[in-house]
Amino acid sequence: MPKPDDNGVIDISHRAWSELDPTFWEYRTTLLTFNASFNNIGPSLSGGVGELIYLRELDLSCNKIDAIPQEIGRCIRLKKLRVNGNQLESLPCEIQGCQLLEELYVSENALHELPPEIGTLHVLKTVKAQNNQLKKLPPELSDCISIEDIDCSGNKHLEMIPEKLRTDTKLIMWICEMHKNNREKITELSTANMELEDYARQSDEEKLKLKDEVARLKKIESVLIAERPERYLKAVETVSKVCVIS
Image (spheres, rainbow, N blue to C red):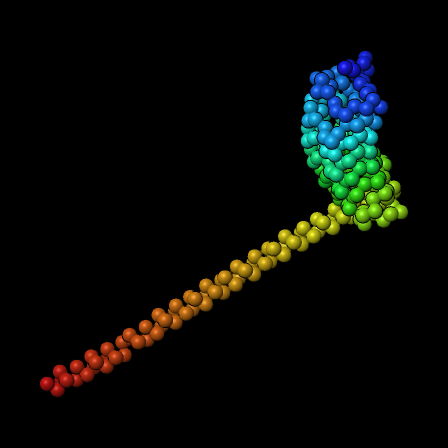
């Protein structure tokens, strides 16, 4: 079983591995670079990779992996992640735990989207996501202030970014920022609309209450009118006159 060399490197690329031996995860403090590219690893990757808390570079490119475990977020010192050339349809949102990530290579997969949590990776410089099934980019990508290179070419369903601009990092970031700002405005408008609808509903409820109160008061008025002292006074006056005559 390969062990980390003096530089903390294990390279098992091009060796027809179909799965990774759990023994690799035991090198949690000594394994810094792990290259397992160009094998037959898949369809899933063991969550044991989360044990590699000192890992700086992970290369799993050109395998048959269809899912990256959530535990990848525990690799808090990871700077470079290569998972291009696999069968991934999504990335776990836990990738936000890799706060030192600088390079992300996810091209040649079947990704439909990138997680919005990618926007929390403020030292991310490179995102290679070409030749996937991306329908949109997360607007939060505009929060990655260190981005230098984005490539999302070869995504035929990506209407958000014009085809000729899918390698233009500055324009991609600008478009993402516009989408983010517009979404925030839509959220504000939706909130305001909900508040107005709530106010209108309360107003209607108050109107109904007032209408019921008016009806109740009218009933009371009718009773009071029927019982007002006019008849009583006339009766008293008549009695008084009779008494005087007597």
